[in-house]
Length: 327
Image (cartoon, rainbow, N blue to C red):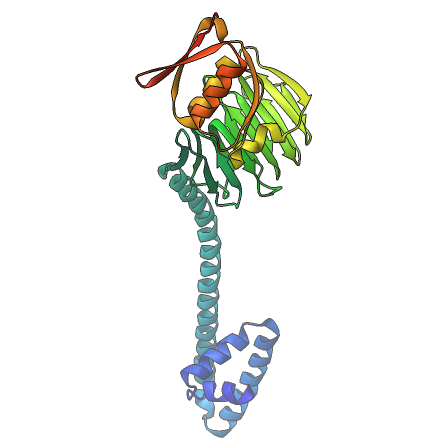
């Protein structure tokens, strides 16, 4: 560094060398060393070239050069500090701005919903973005939004569906059916929640789920495999029982198990399975039925009903009337 200092004092420093010298002088211990080198150089120069009558003027010039050098160092230091503070200031502004624009984008980009529907007489199967598989029964719909599996796993259900849920402990899946909420992590279960029926049924085959009411704060029920909950819409009552779950979930495989079901509820299932409208006499609405429907056509089912119960089946245009047979 001594050679660069000497070149600077002689006025022969390049720009790169001058910048290197300025950077070196910024450290306090180097400044005192620079002063000593300068004084030594001054003494040599004065002895060699400067007449005695100009020594004071020469030293004044050297001192002025030193002051200019120090001022240059201070200006660069102030500029460096300014940019440091500016960077901190920009960070303080940028973070809230980023959060604001994120929130603004979420507010200005409304949720877009996808609806999957199964027509009467059909069963639809869908795989969701999180790999959850859902079988949607006849006359039923499910709906989820474009944030599904990113910020939520919320599903709205009207009708009946069977869920094989992909496990995600950080983001539970929630099925909403009218007032009932079914919360799950990873499991297999079925929900039957047709608007025209008085009860919502939840059947659990695997895993563990929690039921809750959207309107009644403390109404909750945990379920284990092999259990069924009947949720009565009228009074928000949950009744837990143990069942053979296959009788309630085999519909996803095209099999309908009817067990001690009154005719008024049986025709609802027949309407969805066969896309046929029924009218039932008041006198026979409570007749119970137990049988299994696999691949039988509707005429075979109706013929069986006529044989095992006092019911007459009458085709009336697009509707089928079920009347009480007195004889």
